[in-house]
Image 1 (tube, rainbow, N blue to C red):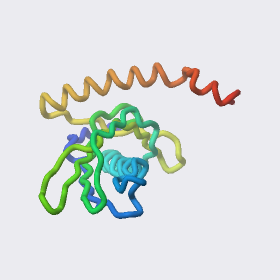
Image 2: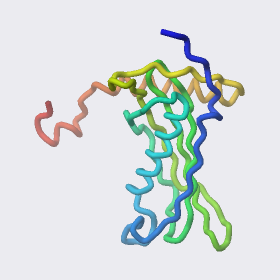
Image 3: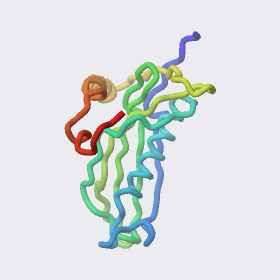
Length: 170
């Protein structure tokens, strides 16, 4: 298998903007969390795919935090970037900020960490290019991602009590 050339995280950056419209809202006229999650998944997948130039699938969403609500008529900007590349998986961070289009006020609304797996043409796992870490911040972020990955893998196969409340699982 040929050696894949490292790529800097900045080359995977995605910026996506959405306007919060009435069908995107909950009963409080603010953004429905599920819709924001959908946009996060799309931005994250584009970022992962941009890094490895292969189809990717979402493997997990480890962290998802809603920091503030977003009102109908406001705009949200999603920024996604690959934080770490492992053998066949990538960790992507996504940050969502809201903007009041009338005042220009902006604030953080949502943040997420996701894992994507790259696939080959036959839908088996594909090797991804390593990250070319150029700054101290990128190096620290990669080390943090490695620690999160170790925790994620340790939890992955454990059947939690919360799953047992639904009865027997295959």
